[in-house]
Image 1 (cartoon, rainbow, N blue to C red):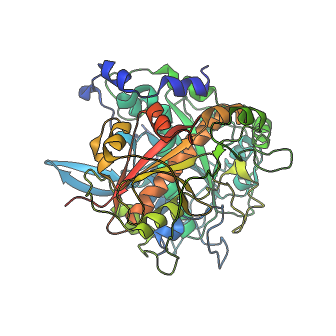
Image 2: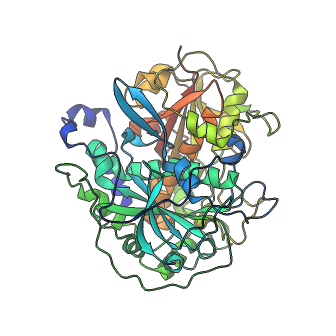
Length: 546
C-alpha cells in the first residue's frame, strides 16, 4: 500500500507534467450526476424547512462541538432532511445554454458530486408536529430530499464501537457518514481524486456544521473510526466507494448497544456510473493505507495527538529549522517571524453582515470573473477571522471536556498564507496570516501575473483581490500520526475552504472560488517561511466584474 507522502508527491502538478499530459475527457463516458439504489424502499424523513435566522458569519465561526449559544440546551428535534439538504442537496435549478442545470449546496470539484451522505439514527422525535423517524441506516438522495433505507433498526452502537467508544458518537442520536465514490470524480481528475475527496467532503461538512450549530445542536467531526466496520455497515466496496468522516449531531442519553452487523452486498445503483468506468487503483490503495482496524487502534491513534504533557504536539517551530523539526514532536505550524505586521480589524457580531446561513448557502456561487477594484480591509479581515478558526475534531480533545471557551482544535495542522493584490490599506505582497492575533505578516513580494501562474496559469486568480492558500507540513504530520494524518490535513483545509466560501458570500459585494495549483511552485514562492510545507487548498476572493 502506498504511503500518503508518496501519494502526495505522485499527484503534484507541475508545468512540465501538464504540458506532457495528453489526457482528454471522454464525455460519452461521463458519470451520472447522482446515485440511486435499486429495489430499496425510499422514505421521506421530513420536509426541508428554513434554518433559524442565525447569521452565517456567526454559525461558521464555532470552533467547538457546542454551538455559540445554547439557551435551551440541545433539546429540539433534529431536522435530518434540512441538515442534509443544506449540506449536499440541490438548492437551485437554472437554465444554462438551453439545458437545465442543478446546483448543490456546497462546492465540489468539477461539479461531479462524488461525496454522499448516510445517516445512522436512533428513534427520533418529529419537529413541529411531524412524524418521528424510525431508527435505521439511510442514504440521502440530493435530488429528491428523500432517503433510501439500507437497514432498519438502531445501529448507532456499531458506530460507537468503531469510534473507540468516543463520547461524541456514543451520545449522538444521529451520526452522518460522508463517503466518496472514486470514479465519479476520477473521470476528470484521475489520481488526484483522493485529495478532492477531503476538499469536497470538507465544503459539505462546513455547511453541515454551520446549519447544525445555527439550529442549536452540538456537532462534531469524528475522523478516528474503524473504516472496514463502517464500510460493512453501509454495504460499500471500498474499491468503489469508501467512508471518509463521521459527524455526530446532537446529544441524548439513549445510547445504543453494539450489535452484530450482517453483511450486505454492495448494492448496484439503478443506473450505472458510466458505460465503462476506468479503474484508478491508487485511490483505494492510499485510502487502505490510512485505515484503522478496530476501536482499540482508534483510541491509540487519538493518543498520538497528545504530547507527554497532554498538549497537542502540533506546536510551532522556526521556518526551515530542519534540525529542530526532527527533534520536536513533529511540530507542523509556522511561528511568526520578524516581517512587517499589519493588524486586521474584523467587525464584531453587532456590526457584521446579518445574512442568514440559509441565504448565504443559496447565494454561494463560483465566481469566474473578478474586478480589479480593491475590497474593504474590514471585509477581508472578517472573512479570514470567521473562516480560519478551529474546527471541532475528535482528535484534538475529548468532546466531553470541550466547551464554548475551549476550542477543540488549535489551528496548527494548516497555516494560512495570502497573496494580496487589492485590499484597502494592505500593500500588495505575500503574507502569513496569524489567526490568533488577526495579523498579516509580510513574507515577500508578489504580483497578479505570478499569482495566476501559480494557479495552473489561470489568470483569473491574479485578477482576484486576494488568494488564500492553506499549507501543511505533510512529512511532519504523517511521521507523527501516520497516513491518516494526511486525510486530516486535507480535511482541515477542506472545511476551511467551505467556510471561506460561506464567509465570502455572506457579504453582498464579494464572491470567490476554489482553484488548484502547481504544488512546489507555491511552496517556493512562499519560502523560506513555508519551507517543508505544501499547499492543500486555494481560494480566490474579490468583487465580481461588471
